[in-house]
Image (cartoon, rainbow, N blue to C red; front, side, top):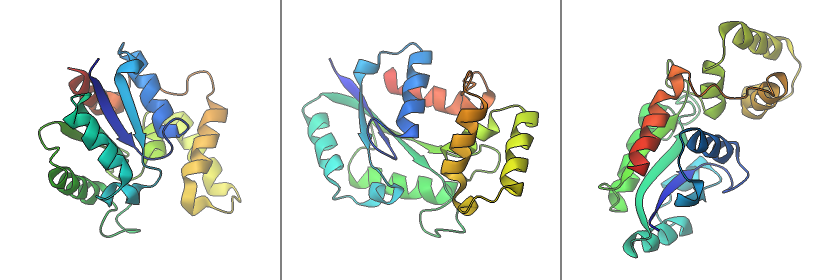
Length: 189
């Protein structure tokens, strides 16, 4: 069986990115066994063409074991990283890597962020997809809390989100998931 590959931040099986992607793939009715996940741990590793995961992927593509590739990477913030931060920088640098790897014909990119602001991360996408009342509640809590690492709010926000809304953690019917769903449909076609 020819597979597809999804490259994402975090660990292969234990990252919030891979959990969300697996849930969404199942929600769309696709077979998870057709997906080879590559966890790149940190965003910066995507921009290292010598990363061993690229060599592994390239070999599987050459052996026709993988037919398509989807890069799923956080936008983050341009203010914290002028080269790789922000939607446009992330997308441009990934396109450059895809070209250098000769994956242009089979690869696509999804930059994870708040679709309205075009910055942030997976947690920003999740927060953008919940009702305004719930979003305001979480943001108010974060603003008045005394968390030591509020500037690195990814993990704090994710934990609050999971604990506050454990029964319906992701609303895949929300319009903010439409682009990612389309990218996944294209990946499996």
